Length: 494
Image 1 (cartoon, helix red, strand yellow):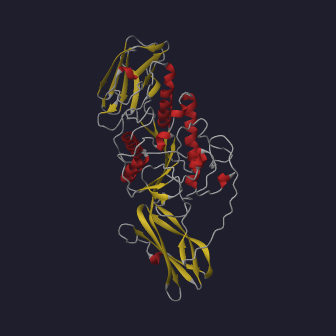
Image 2: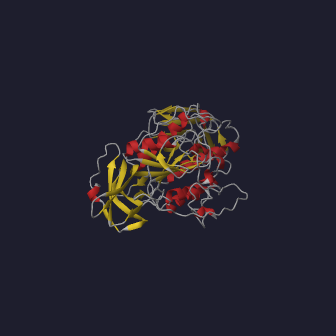
Image 3: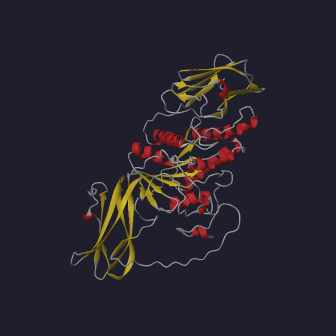
């Protein structure tokens, strides 16, 4: 049962069925020979580590170290701005002094630097000073750490990023940090979900350009704090079985959910991370709305419980288009049903948002292009910023109401902003007798008006999203904020 091992650079678990080897490893921890050595671990501190800020907009920073001293010594710590080398107020040498007992054979120890303010990047500098002589016995430093917000990224291949190319690559910035699949902190750069030196084999994948870096850059720029992304998706995986939580062992690293959870919990943060972003659902098409919706709602509830944050935000991506989608075949409604489950979950949960993607270009039958993923990152960040950071952003048109308009042969669909696009082929109206033929669709201002060939009878519902190409005349905001969400069988109010 190897998942209980930290397993750095060791991966024998897999989510596919089949046998696996039994491996016994004996490790001996050796003390360094230097007078002072900072211990770099994902659960402590390393270059590019980002610590989740707390309610007071700061975070404690652990400093594990090993030292050798034949006489009483003192550890001194300071934190400086990486770009200027100037110490942060309250975090100079004189502010952090720790007395140490003699340790001629060396020993491990740890101190904690409290109240490190949100921001960065910072360098953490340490020195070992002999008490009697004030001589500096040793020095070490950690570079480019930060305090900000951490986001877990999960799902399937469209979160992994299957654009097939990196060009034009989203340029990295110092404000976006990445805890990679190799369990190493680093500056965020594409491919964000790189499988090089993968630790948890359960999510091993091949990635190119994704949405993650653009999302992180926009979030950091507008939120005013650095952002870290912890990726854990796996291509081709479904929610109904492969992303299920192991109730007996939620952090089981042989499962996708457990591996994602473990990557966060191994950080041992003092405060829970800020949010989760999710792009998944293609592999659940065929199971339908009634199956997918409760699974999605449970996933969100599980993340909030296991990550100990009832206010964890959930940023979702509604499915984009599918090549060769046949709008005339009722079985193809299953695609739209997953889209509706995603829309409904976000609409019902004040801590969730979902971005519309039907107009984004694809690199193949289901995956997006580099340009598409970059736009997804922008839209998802805009939705998160607008809803959870108090930063108003231009979003896609938001559905306000659907109702009959002056009789049962005309339906008015109202949105919150000026619209463009829209076509009768994108819509379907059903009443108690079945499909009601549409005579015309007119878009004017914030309203879409559907004229039926005859009056609808009894309970009536409207669906929107019947097209197989991002080039279809999708309904979009006239201000360029993005597309409207697809929806399925939304009831028409009397």
